[in-house]
Length: 328
Figure (tube, rainbow, N blue to C red):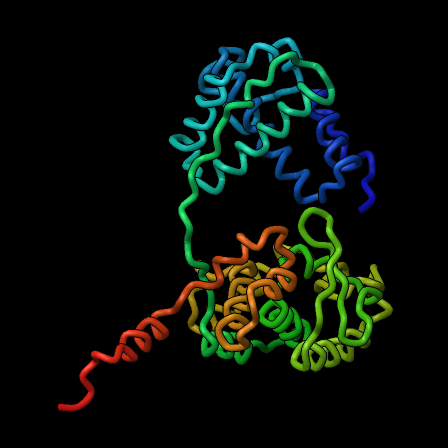
């Protein structure tokens, strides 16, 4: 993925933080979404640091605290205790759950490792002994097969071909929201689709008959306003004739969830990804390694959450016990 200087350099950030983000983007090949996540996490940490160290007056609006003036001498004085205080702050005052706290710990560890080992701006790494919070394993939230069909049946309106194609892709392919929005027509060859996934990694997605039929119908309707489209290669187009963005997809999905009498707060595009994986595992009997490749997971341990046994299977397992009395 190519980066412009505007994407990497931010004049409101300290130079060493810009250098770190530049390193992640150009040397480590991290995606734009990953860079944005690091920037948000570390900006929050530096804002906290100014308050915690008394460098900003109490009562200041947190989101408006400037961090450009935090020089490397201040960074050199950071201790493990300061990092613990930040983790406590995001848990008790920002109400970050374990997943969000774990992401911020990962950002801090990567940042200080860079400052110490790569840039050599600090002699000791205060995050070396910083531990990530324990994350309890949770079963994925997903739509049932019946609910998935209800969602598809609810789609109508001016953009029904586009919206049907988008939701069909989610439910059948298990792709991420960012992957779907970035699909180019040139990346589709017969029944194969190439996407750039998490970590800027390319993977191939195979389109089944439902996807190909939905795609065919959408492209036919898309051709009707082809001359207005700004990015001719972008597959999914917004009402403004530009590449559709993530927020538009989220709003669109929420509308159809409500129409289908499904929980619009509970289910998100990512939950549709969970749905696709669960349905493939439950009804398609897809093995865990194949599912890992389909979803683009780096580690199979991430895919293991889809091996959860549903209540009906548990019920059938108990019924199958030979000691179960079926007749008197």
